[in-house]
Amino acid sequence: MTVTEFRTVPRRPRPVARRRPGSRFAWLPLFAAVAALLICAGLLFAAVTGDLGRDALVTLVVFVAAVWLWIFAPVPDTYVALGAAVALVVAGAIETETFTATLGDSVIWLLVGSFLIAAAVTATGLAARIAARVLTVARTPRQLVHLLTAALLVTTFAIPATSGRAALALPVFLALAAVLRGRPQLVLVLAVAIPSVILFSAVGSLLGAGAHLITAEIVAAATGQEFHFLQWLVLGLPLALVWSHLAAEIALMLFADRAERRTPLTVPATAFDDAGPGVRGPLTAPQRRMLLVLAAVVTLWCTEALHGIDPAVVAVLGALVATAPRIGGTTLPAAAKTIPWTLLLFMAATLCLGIALTSSGASAWLGALVFDPVRSLGAAATMAFLVLTVLISLPAHLVVQSRSARSAVLIPIVVATAPVVGVDPMAAAFLSTAAAGYCHTLTSSAKPMAVFAESDTVPGFRAEHLVRYSAVVAPLSVALLLAFAVWVWPFLGLAPTT
Picture 1 (cartoon, one colour):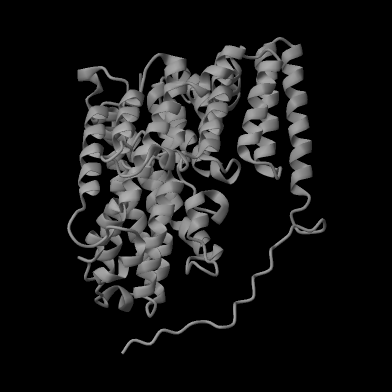
Picture 2: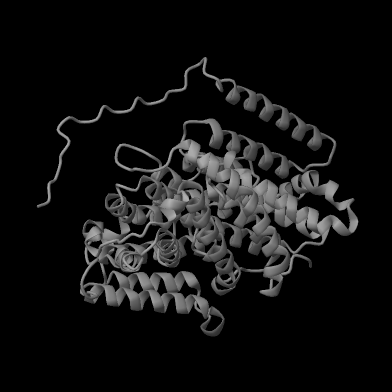
């Protein structure tokens, strides 16, 4: 007989931490504001002496203000980005057409179509079904962790946002946590590993994160060279595989002792009954159709060179099929409600900021200021540039929390500076974007980390767990990224030197 216990007395809500004027770090925003004003004064001096043009000066001042607001102001990131873009237009640093065109860019339409397809896939329960089928095979904690990693890797090509993949994975995690309630070490391992894998696996697809599309657009605007879906897949998927499984294994080794790792387990299929519709039994007709749509869309993206159809058009065509009456997995109005329109506005605005940094010459000037000492190293300049790129990009999440904003800030500088030291701009941009995908030091560093943090409803990790985990994963990530840049990506067609 099964006995179900219910809590009759609700838990007392945790007090909300509020920053008091006399708190330990209350001085930090003021200190940063003073530093920003000093930087702007330095930029004005550079403009007066003729080292910096007017448009570059305006762009950099707006850029400094936007970064400060992103870090310290209690204002949505999208609001700041749109304000910065409009300020550039009003000040004459960019044309009005440049600002308005970014919202109609093919990147935005590519994401719109991809989100519609993702909504249809989620509505049919296909993604949860795949995860459930895979996880019931596991017989040891290590098998469970790595099979879950493999399942999350697959979702990279179905859902074009790390936050969306986190929302999809949360019910699966809660089902596993309920089954494993007597094994808290393993629950903690999963709480840390799942968001980590979601973030690390994103580099495997051009659609894995909005930052990738921003990088592709900035590189195309600055160099005329384009990242295609298949090229990004060839370069990013090997890194995603190694990085994700390495992160999962580290979580297992850090948070589960030897006895826990050796204890067998069984995950019943019934554990996922509440994870969504269509999880058990044979594939439903909508699920089969969504599998065909996904396969067709990914195939067309990978074979763009053969048929010449733009990926954005492919995505919209796939979305029309996925939401077609009597055929699709959901309706178009229902799917449209799931599109994160604020994210699309944010991407358009940050793309505008990235274009302004490149076209005004601001990125070239700033890049020379930061990376000029590297040129004096002679033959070692290339390696020093790659190391510096990783060491700046990887911890950038501590300053700018938005992944897309980090790319809008970093990529123009990297692309403008790379040729000076003999580094291929595409290779430098790809390396910086991959490194900027590291978001593991704080709970607030990325939405997936926040989703799986401990709360009254989620048996997740605490801040000290994340710091401990990051202390191990961060240096290994630096080494892994440099190894791929020097040895793996050249073999795959992207050499670091021009």
